[in-house]
Length: 530
Image (cartoon, rainbow, N blue to C red; front, side, top):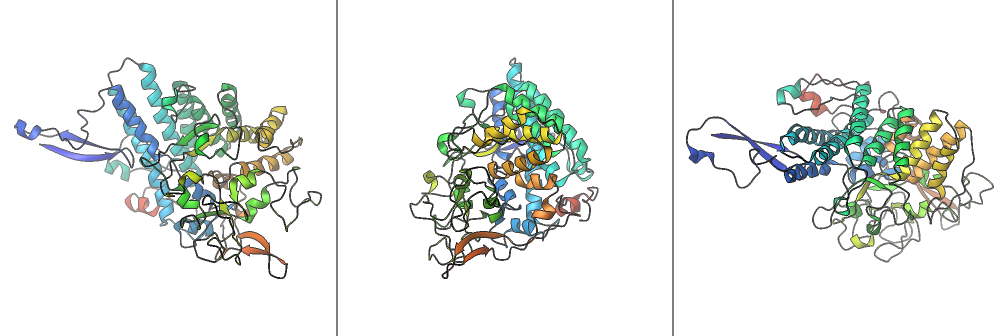
């Protein structure tokens, strides 16, 4: 008779496989009609395509927005949200967020391992296609390991399917070896993948995506020459460029534009996300404002003439704080007076009497700012049923990675300024003055500021403040929001309720290994001071 066990490729596709023990009667050898059997799978190129497609479901989606909520530029809006425990520094190894990110990553790794072990069974003469599928799987697996290394440091390196007993015997692999593996996998994948696909195959991992992820991983690892070289390879492919409009970059009309190297693809009604409901203003059909921008981020955007708002010559007026600012501010954040998807005006002041007024409900933004990226009027009718793709890697990041790596290497040449200035003024709706600084210290400050504003709410800030070792400085004290005149005309700055952050430099630069994992396997060494 047959014994059954279930292997999950991802949350969406489940393959049930079975092993034959012993049975003499054909009556018991029937083929199940409610699941896929391994005897019937791995037969055709179509099977391989179906299997590799399933690997994409384990990519990050709206959860990456929450990562920014654990930094200085955004805030987890309610302090009882499990993500808030990390922002506030009150989490430990039992926190569900710590476990869920670990679990999702290893779920994706397990699925990729299983795919790579079995795709060779396909009797195909189309070597290029099978190699492409292998390149996709290797790249996606490396994506997960890069995230794990950035969050937890040393983690188990698993490259094949394992039994429960084998899993209980795993030990953590030094983080440098994880980065070595990621570099090897992405370098090899880039040789297996095409530079572009036909329109019907949009969304698949390309050569540029593999090289772009290699550039990012190398930057995370402090391997600046490798980061610069990989980013330069992406630039020289000639495939990618900046989308003409930053404002429209996160709209349905701009999906699959030339700036996107990798995204998680969604389809309304079929495979949707809840990004509108997750971050939208409360007045928009009770959307949740789960992650909200902070004053720190808003104040980071320069004035139109390229000056900090603290510069006395900038012309910045605290009573009119959004006037003559970097256009990316109004494209990324809902500001007082903006028209919302429903057609009403955003009025966050505590005294406004609107549904978005600070303090009107615990769900309304506690800073008076809401995220605008990914909020499309098309989704207003059903905020939990969005089909907008979530961007995971885009060309602007490649340019900033190239610039930062070269700056850290002190290889400052015209190409560094060209990369930074393309981000600052290479679109029709963002035209900031070009930077001309040439010292390492000045350019380091510039590129770090550009990463904060250009990539806001795209999941990079958490990794940036950790690798720059500035979290211990920026992640302390209260969270502040809008500044507005009270009934006497005095300017008042909002302080978010219960937002006093604590960051312990002796342990918070790495998340702890989840306690659930260590309960199952005591061989997993816990991170320092946890």
